[in-house]
Image (tube, rainbow, N blue to C red):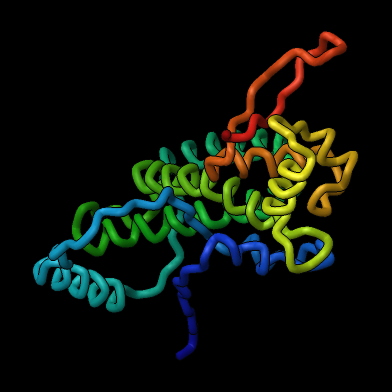
Length: 240
């Protein structure tokens, strides 16, 4: 095979996500190349629903059509390129507002968006939806929709990836909850977690991300209060 390519699809329990991160906090780009989704759990019970034979046949036919296409260089259409540039500029502006730990995955989204646009255009061409071989604005828009959807999941995933404590064996989230219980805390601030280095937290930004993750897991909620000095402050109020 002159151009080998393998696509891997896998699942991992949320509690094991931190295992993907380097213990010493080094970035090698491996996790940045993984497109992940982290949907809310759905408990629907038993179902007899299956993929219909018609859908299976149509999918097989699509794969055969794609396999028979000749390799060639394609480009953006004028409209497709305009839409790509518009999104590309917004994407890079967004990167300037992100915390450093999200720069890696966001930098990969640019190439993934282009690849998805090409895949979508090729599928539309193979199925006869369009006679245009070059990537048009419809395919670019569809790719952008997918990437923007993945961005929200990536934020959530990276909060879990960063939950590994400096001391192996105890998830930082659990350490925070245990610390709050021992101290009799009803609310926690990011500064407190950083000051006491709870769960191995090294800075307030990490603490803020951990509190967001705990909120997503249903352990409490983030609220804005006025502290004793009369200044606004966001604290995490534990669920009673």
